[in-house]
Image (cartoon, rainbow, N blue to C red; front, side):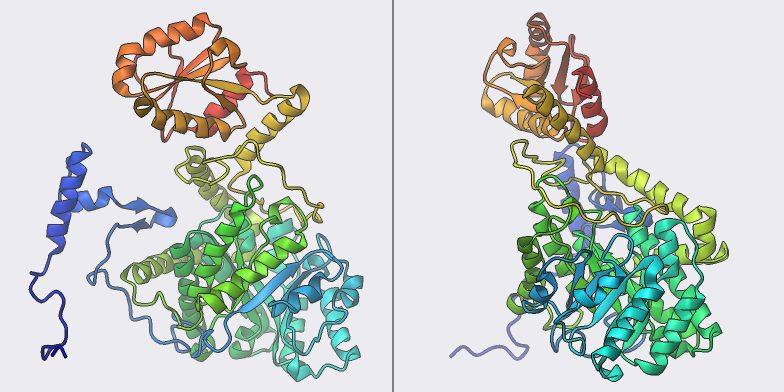
Length: 602
C-alpha cells in the first residue's frame, strides 16, 4: 500500500509556482509568431474580447480577479439563489408556452415532463373565452398556470379565477401568475395602461390566493428590441420599482408587493453571459428590496425563456443546439422556471415533434446531466464571479439613468428607451453583417439545398411599440431574394470560384468564399470553365504568393470570358483587373446585397 506524505498527495510539489508575468511572456511569444509585437498587459489585452455594455472578457482569470462575497443561497444578496435548497429537490419548473389551441397539446405536455403552463391569451393568442377549453382536463391544483394576456389581462384573470372556483380548487393550492404587466404591454404596443387594475389583482391574490402572483416583470420586450444584457436588466429593475411603488401605494406592504412579482428574462446561447445575467439580476433586486426596507423579501423569482432573437429561420434544426446551451445556462444560473422555445418557433406554430424536443431538453439536462444537483455550480469561478459583478454594475447604472429621467413609463413615452435599444442593436448589427458574430447555418455554413421547414402561421403578436428584431434578419432578406429568383428562373444566382494553383494553396479561401456567397443565396460553382458555369461574376481564390504571380492575368482571362465583376478572396491590394475583395471582417451583407443587385436579383 502506498503511504501518502503528511500533506497528502501534492502533484505539483516539485514544480515551482508560475507567475502571471511568466504566463504573459509566453503569450507574447505566441503573438510574436503571428506578427504582433506586444508585451505585458498589452499581450493579454490582445487576446481579450470586447462585449456589450463596456464589458471586456480577458483570456485568463485568477484569484486576483476578486469579486464581492456572493453569500449563500436563500440569503441576501441572493446572488447564489433565492431559495436555500435551490433546484436540488426536483429541478426547475418546466414551463411550456401555448399561443394557440392545438388538440391534445396541453395535456400531452403535462403528461410528458412539463410542470406548468404559459398561456398567451387575447391578441396574438388564444381567445379569452376559450380558456376553459384550453385547460380542459388539467388538474388546476397541480399544474401552475401563467397568463400572458396583454390588454385582456383583467378579463383573462377573471376567467381563470372563476375557473378555479367552478372546479372547486382550494385557493391555498393555486399556483401560477395572472401575468399583469401594464408597462410590458406599453413596451410592446406603445399604448399606456393604468397600473391600478394590476394593483387590485395583486391585493386580491395577496388576500385570497397566497400561492398566486399577479404581476410579471417581462424583460423580453427589451431583449427582443435588440437590448444588451445590462439594458435588459436595467429596464426590468425600473419596471419592478414602478410596480412596487404602485402596489405599496395601494396598501400592500413592501414584503407583500415583492411577493406578487415574477421576473422574465431571456437566455441566449452565450452561456456565461446568461449565467452572469441571472445571478446579477438576483443581486440587484435584492439590493432594491433592501433599500425599500424589506431585505428578507428580495429573493427574485425568475422565469427564463430561450431567446427568440437567436432563433433562425434557415436551417432551423440548429436552433435545438442553441436552446440546449441556453437552457443549460438558465439552469446553472439558477432559474426557477424555464421555457424552451421549440426549434421551429420562428416559422409558425410548433408541431408535436418540436414541442417534444423542447420539453425533453430540460428533462435531459436535469435527469441525465444532473444539472440541478448542485446549487449555483458556477459560483466561485473567477470568471463568472467577475463577469457577474461587472454586469451588475453596468445594469445598475442603466437602471439609475432610467430613474433619473422619470422612471420606466416616462422612458417608454419619451422614446428614450427605444433610442438606447436601437443604438445597441445598430452596433450589434454591424458585427452580424461582418460575421464577427456568426450565425451557424445562416451566415456561416449555410445549406442552400436544404428543404424548407413549413409550419402553420402563428397568431400575429401585439405590435406598435418597440420593434422585434432577429439576428438573422439581414441574411433572411438576402436569402428571400435568392428564393424568389429560383422560383422565377429555376436556378439560383451563381458565382464562379476561380481557383489558382494546388488545392493546398486555394482550399482555405475557396471554402471561405463559398460560405460567404451562400449566406446570400448565391450558389458557388467550381470545376468547370467560366463560360459553362452560368455565372456572371467570379472570385479568385488562392494564396498571397500565387496572387502576386497570377491574379492580374487570371482576372483578365475571366473578363475576356464574360465576367462582369471579379472578386479576390483576400485582403485588399493593388491587383489589376480585380474589382473588389472579400475577406474575414468585410461587410458580408453589403457585399452580398450589392452582388445580388448587379445580378438583377430583386
